[in-house]
Image (cartoon, rainbow, N blue to C red; front, side, top):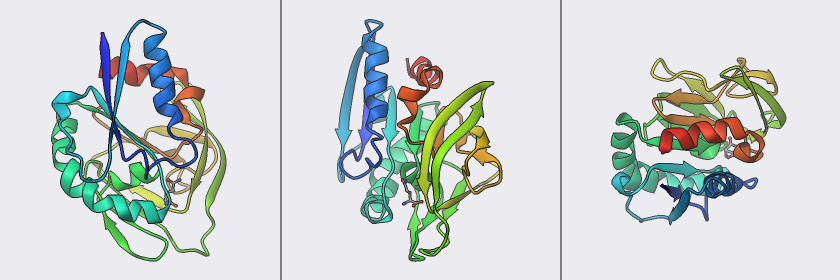
Length: 211
Ligand code: GLN
């Protein structure tokens, strides 16, 4: 078996070591004799969902998110949105998660258009606002997830998505007790860490869906 992963904007959307998620997926495939192939897609690169089994997008500061937003919405967004409707596995962390929604209003009040894959929006209340920074414990499918959050944006879910995890310690989406979002086989989360090396059960859940 072979798992083919599209890594979206690894040079720009790779904050707090989110690349560790790719390393964990590679290890958990190869340790089981499953081939793992990661393709890096940067600004301007086309996204053909038929060429992959899943996609990953990491987090970033507002500056990098501004550089990525237009390309994510107009170049990769359409084919990715269509694939997600068909159950394609997409895993997005923090800044990537925010841009998967309808819009991200950054710390300077600038509204970045999202790819509209997840029914949510994010608002950063400004540079004076308390940043959500620290270790996180959350509950997903009866399992404990651990990670690290560092974001100013507050994310608000629409009716079209479910929360990903219930907060046990930390802030999550906006302090309302929930973290991340799930829609079909798309998962958005604020958890860095990186998440997958620290949470093998969820890592294997993604791999099972993608394979
Ligand atoms: N720049 C976004 C925020 O501050 C996302 C940060 C991140 O990806 N860690 O909310």
